[in-house]
Image 1: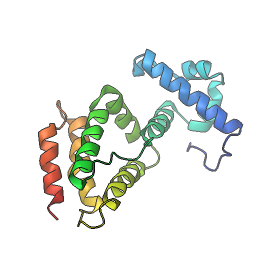
Image 2: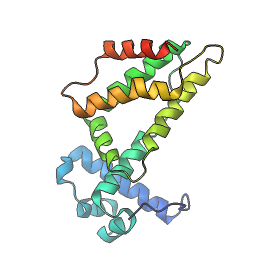
Image 3: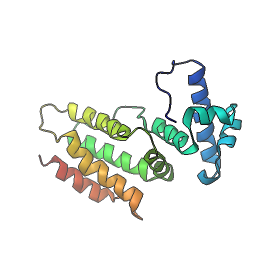
Amino acid sequence: MAIKEGLRPGGRSARVQESVHSAVRELLEAHERSSVTVPMIAARAGVTPSTIYRRWGDLSVLLADVALARMRPDSEPANTGSLRGDLQAWAEQYLDEMSSDVGRNIMRDVQCSVTPGYCVSILSGQLQAIVDRYPQETPPSVDRLINLLAAPTVFRILFSAQPLAVEELHALIELALQV
């Protein structure tokens, strides 16, 4: 079952969503994710399990929804005064956040998401904001930045024992800037 679209902001549905999302975040902080269940979430959120199943379908979709909400940036990318500096600040922060245990779990949950392309749109928006700051330069395309910065970072975090080294990330930024 897909997450319902077009819900009234601030209505009962929004309150239920926030309550359930809060319950998931709290439970994931206190318990191993494999031990978190829909009945636990429902009890913490003050709703019935059927409310969760009706709205999200199953636990993996709910976890993906919470993960997607957590991925929304809460601020603009850092402005260091240079394109290279902004890309380094953004890429280092992304590497640091996503290679944490919480970040890895978020990425795994997002893989179960029913909204493909959501992560790319978030990353594209962040990178476009950086590129737009420097119209006088010939910046790389956002697609190039996704392919050379985000893709190897995510791949190494999810499929390697070690995340991408910061030095390698800097080398990829230099490669991306060679337009």
